Length: 216
Image (cartoon, rainbow, N blue to C red; front, top):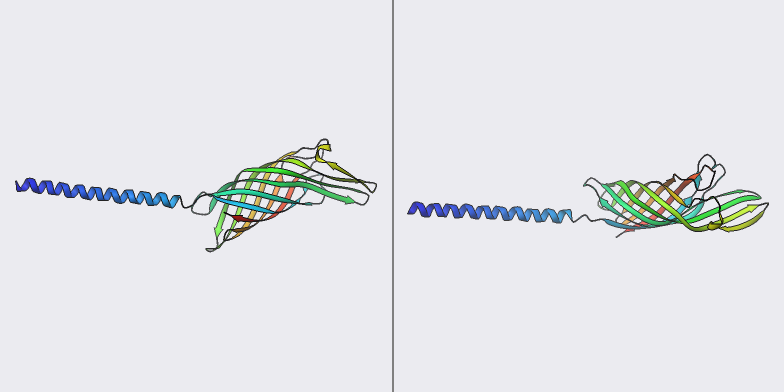
């Protein structure tokens, strides 16, 4: 009889140890989930100047035109080593200018731009400061704008819809670097378009952007 009671006691003890071990594992699993959810996507609002221009075989003599860029984006970490990806939606400008005395042309179009993906790497300097480098693709469409043509010293204003042979759609790449102090950001980016806006003229978008941003 003593052997039977001893066997039952041993079985109960082993069962309690197994339950305790299971509880510990389950608790550890919950902690892991909490750790993973502590790095959500980060939303960023940026605004600044866009030095809009064109480059290409026929871009000689063309100067940049100062415009603007406003965008909202998000970044999502890809790893614990600083890699991230994101998307961006914004309003910006595309344009150019030249002036040869009695002849000139100032053009500035306002567009909506969407970047379906951006990949980058952020290096943490300390708890407050970090720098990042990023590369992304974008597509844009000119919605409104226009400019002024000058011929024989006389200027003529026009709207975007008055232009014949003008391509409103554009697409290209953005390459940039940024500096972060806490949740505040200074970003310097270069945009290169692949589509020619002017018919029979070999030029493409070449923009430089300087923007400040805040993350939330």
